[in-house]
Amino acid sequence: MTALSKEQQTEFEAAAFRRLVAHLRERSDVQNIDLMNLAGFCRNCLSNWYREAAEAEGVPVTRDESREMVYGMSYEDWKNLHQNEASLVQKAAFELNNPHK
Image (tube, rainbow, N blue to C red):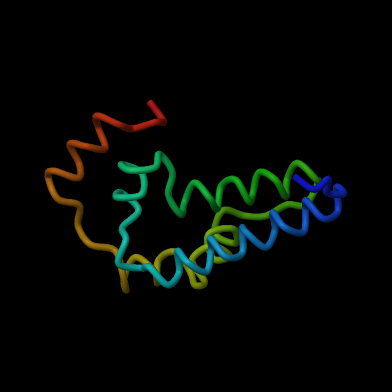
């Protein structure tokens, strides 16, 4: 593998992050509970990681601001437009696999 400078690595990581966020915005049919059950993280986790990274650098970011960055709109608007009630199967899988226990 070609040696990357720290700046290049950061640039590529940022590009991958932006692509992931864009993909998650396009795939609003994929519910957060499905992401949690399959991958152990969801859009809310991603927004929390963003907020924590900003705060680690001394930049205060609210939960609502970080969620809007990931969702492309307020979390309440996203829920109203895209979130479905979780099925019993989804809820059971979440209880079994919940990585935040």
